[in-house]
Image 1 (cartoon, rainbow, N blue to C red):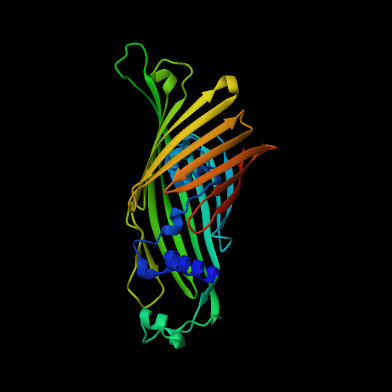
Image 2: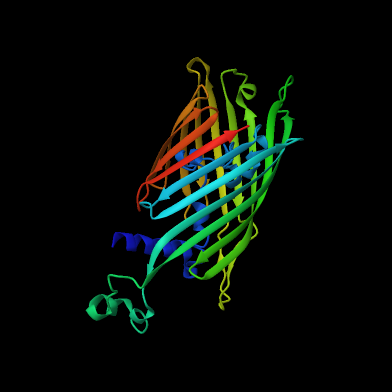
Length: 336
């Protein structure tokens, strides 16, 4: 019964056109990248690995190496799977391009014959035993949500004269955008749409700004998702289209080296404006570029994670709490 209830909730939240505008694009809100999600989704300002194509495409051009990133997530007691793969390629002139594929798959969703529903209301079905749904469904179906993103990013380096006589403050401004193609399948029906995201990332060296060698870098990020009004059209006779809500992510991060401890500590904060607004808090500790521990918090949910470098490959793990159940995410990052 618990499985049926959870699958029912998933099918409503992720698939039902009746909730267009609220749930139409919610599978894209799950987030990508084990490292980013282990930090509670506070990543739009940092955005310095392959998942930046989702969090803030402006950060892609500040990456120095090519990277392949893969993630697999077990959602809601293994009732759903969530997969992500991305590739980032830096080019000359501080330009980077990237693409990714994301899929949410929900299998074994039960369905029941319409004869149990037609001509009745909820109260009748609750109080009349003859109208109760049978324990065995008439069948099962599968729902898949696919997202394809292609991104371009340009990094601009400049100095800002802050009024001091002898030096300028160095800044790096990453400007990026991506086009995304959405495909959703619900039983025999297919929905598709196209959207656009824009990202801005600003980075500066605080040791220059405050004339203190021990200080690290300050990152500020803005990510504008579905800026052109993304809609999903279905291959049915209905003229109703699912509208994906516009969202803005704003973030700030401080990356502070601790040379005596051979470590780097990152503090990050994000705010999502969609719906009622959500605060995201993240903490990451890196030791000698060999491994990481991280914590995160958002919307009453906690997250934690770890990374370890093995033969040049970074292996990532994250655990995230959720009202429906704990989710586990595994991933790897290969830079070259």
